[in-house]
Image 1 (spheres, rainbow, N blue to C red):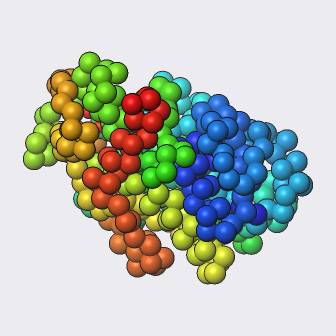
Image 2 (cartoon, protein in one colour):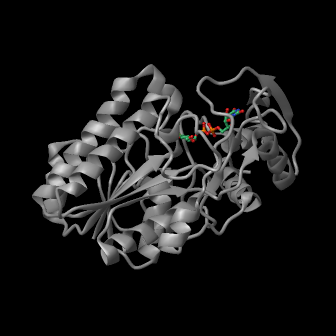
Length: 322
Ligand code: UFG
């Protein structure tokens, strides 16, 4: 049985579905502060806070073999406002989870990490061995969690894989689960809101970046590709019994303008685009060098940007009754 914390959230619910489809048994633990119980359509569900000592009850009830840990706060902007909230939940509560895992002899752990651990990278594409210099509390909270895992693994009888996501995007092709943040801050769902007229326009946060069209470049990866990478990482832990860290991206960058153009193409709708000030803390370019996970786990992403936007559009139409 795999324990999936945060399995009622965006990436967690897609991965929980993929795990069950691959034949794994799962128990989702989620306190539903950000997630949706309706997203837990596969496996078992337990309404617990992963940072609480009560979580032991879940370990007593189920025969847990490993933990895939999605539960975390992930808004960069909020982390700047409320750093303690991020350090407490993302770091301190993870230590609590690790302690309980030790007590129950559970030795496999996968962490949802982030490209935010790199801060403003020194070179593009970004390799895993680049120096980590997070520039916001969110990235910092994940970085110190990675460090805690490294120390835990050094003690023995414990292995982890840390997956550093670039920009998760897209939705389940069957629309059984999808992206539903409140408030929504991510580019693609906001652009799709403009496409359906829920917003008057989409704002581009800065056009004076050091990129060909002046807007920020990011590496967007389909959430189903992220899900399959977690399964590959879990199999690696089972077979190799080694710890490792991998970037999860497509290795290809798209500017904000290119994303908007793709959304216009996929939806067939036009909408206003406004130029706004830069958003604080946005690096010019983030693109993964995703060769390490390809070489070591044989995993590679399947879905391109058009597929990412098409699947997000299908979900967007469903939740907005279009
Ligand atoms: N953007 C706009 N207008 C908007 C929203 C976003 O121009 O209305 C721009 C942003 O400035 C950025 C790009 O679109 O350049 C992508 O922004 P997102 O908010 O969708 O994603 P981020 O790259 O900021 O953040 C993502 C994850 C974070 C993670 C980070 C790692 O959501 O959790 O990648 O770099 F920390």
